[in-house]
Amino acid sequence: MTAVADAVTSTVDLTPGEAEAYARLRAICRELGSTLVAFSAGVDSTLLLKVCVDELGDRAIAATAVSESYPSHELQQAKRLARDIGVRLILVETHELADENYASNPTNRCFYCKQELFTTIFPVATEEGLATVVYGANLDDTGDYRPGMQAAKVMGARAPLLEAGLGKPEIRAISRHLGLETWDKPAFACLSSRIPYGERVTPEKLAQIDQA
Image (cartoon, rainbow, N blue to C red; front, side, top):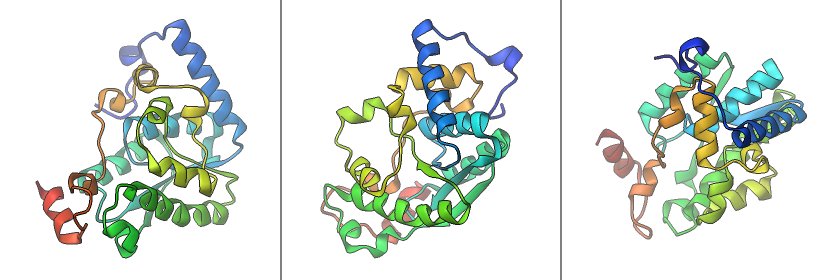
């Protein structure tokens, strides 16, 4: 099955509430003007990327961060999804393990991960002449401990799914409506999340987890 399936055979009707949420998301993405989408190949960022491309065309570009903490199979899927959606994908190297604040694995480790991500991709957006940087935070994330969202806010990244009031059920429903194969993809976290807080994150440990 391709990332964007045949609309005749795979689309599913939206409820009125889901349709309204989808319309809000489209309007927000259109208003961006141009954007760089932080793309992990998860269900949230895949929907965000698809809608940005639908609304902005080649004024939307995807950026995927490559580091020891990103599962290798997810990188391969990110490349395939971007190709199927028809968007240019830029791979950027991030070096969160070089930051002692990250490597020491505190409870707010995700803050330093997102800080490294956005510090890396904002200059890419500037170089490409893109007005905004967006990422896939959604309404459900506001109920969890998400220090990475604070880093995104500090850096000025926008979260259109959150702005549109979309939670995970709506995101999955709209993704299915659009024929995205990720509509029922399980949630996943970075490899570092498998290491207990306080235990140092190392390339060797991450490689073992990735292989497992």
